Every structure is written in structure tokens, then in C-alpha cells.
Length: 149
Image 1 (cartoon, one colour):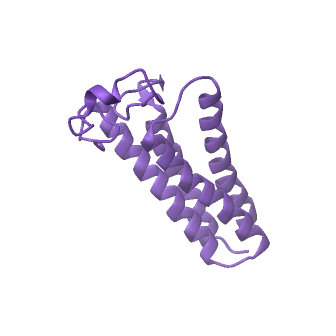
Image 2: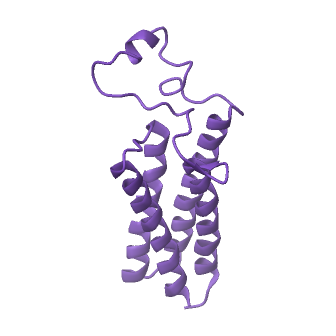
């Protein structure tokens, strides 16, 4: 049971990470906060591999922490997109520290704004879906940690 839960939780992070790359392939470029959300998913996937190959009770708890971190970042990012609170000045509409003209120039790499929703389903953005689905993964990781082997 425990290994099955670990597979589901780690696999969920792999699928969410793969989904992010699929969206990127189809032209939905990630903003800075989108990239932040990817790292904990990668960590959770690695934790899953470790949990299945080097069994120890700490691994599922670390997986839960990784999933909670990406869920928290996703929730924060969704709030920035909805205008509930300000986001990082490096990637939001008010950012740039007086260099807004430079940021909007057509030369150089394209800056993807963190406060703009590029895709949503049922009025929930990609960041919001990541927050919700990752919160579910936290619960699965916790169930794995509490499960008997």
C-alpha cells in the first residue's frame, strides 16, 4: 500500500511537470514563478525514486514537504494573477524599477509577466491548478508516510 501511494504521489508530480513542459512546447512560455513551481515537483519525483529504492520513513514526509512548497508557490502565484496581492517586481506589471521601457523592448528575450494569466480552465489558471493538485499530492504523501509497509 505504501509503495503504491508513493508511486501515485511521485507520479503525480512527474505528470504535472510533464504537463508544464507540454504547455511550454505549445507556446505557453513560463514566467519566473512558473519555473519556481517546477523545482519542488522535480524534488518530489526524486524523493519518490529514493523512497522506492532506499526505504526510510523520512522520504514520504520529504515528498509531502516538496508538494506543499509547490502548492504554496502555486497559490501565491494564482493570487498574484488575480490581483489579491503583489508579486515579485521582476515579473509583474509594476516591476522593473524604472526600467519598464527596457523590459517592454522588442530586443532580447521575451519577458513573461507573472501577473498575467496565459491559460485557464473553469476560471482557474495553471498556477491555481498546480496549487490544488499539488495539495492533493501532499495528502497522498502523508497517507504514504502513515501507511504500514
